[in-house]
Length: 194
Image 1 (cartoon, one colour):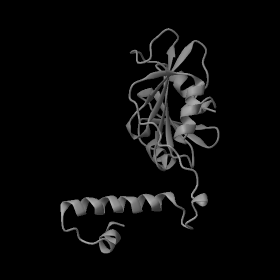
Image 2 (cartoon, one colour; image 1 turned 30 degrees about the vertical axis):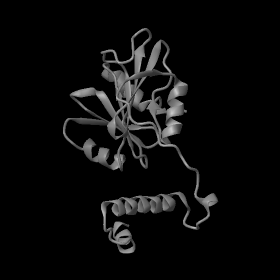
Image 3 (cartoon, helix red, strand yellow; image 1 turned 180 degrees about the horizontal axis):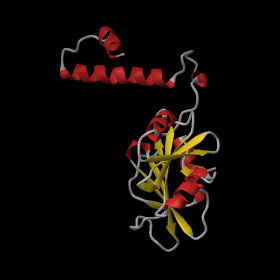
């Protein structure tokens, strides 16, 4: 597209002309992005607000807040469902990684502690990559309902990674109790907030 713009825009004679040329080119690009290929703005589709930027600061949220964020982002956020006596702590990190941590009631968001956490990581073709990882030495795996696969390092079974065919996300369940991590990752509790 840049080469096409260079061919149709005249070479500027001054810095002011260069600035006007750049502004004009950006206006053309914006107009092309907003309008549909048919030229009918009604067929261009919905205009979406930009999603909120990642915030590495943990914050306490409700289950409704998790659902709203999932809808706003247009992507799933996984968790293991509601748990009595806990506060949901949300942390959004670079690369689109999202963490939901189950902090005991009365403990502030961001507090240190090895609490149950579910991570949702965007990974293209996650299932195939995890199938390959599952064949390595010192790695365990277990099938998950729905055709999924749970994979974990035998020496660090507190972190269980789950993938599903056709889902471009890798999920992680962490628990200080390795048996709990594997159980939650494979028993059907791991699911998108709904």
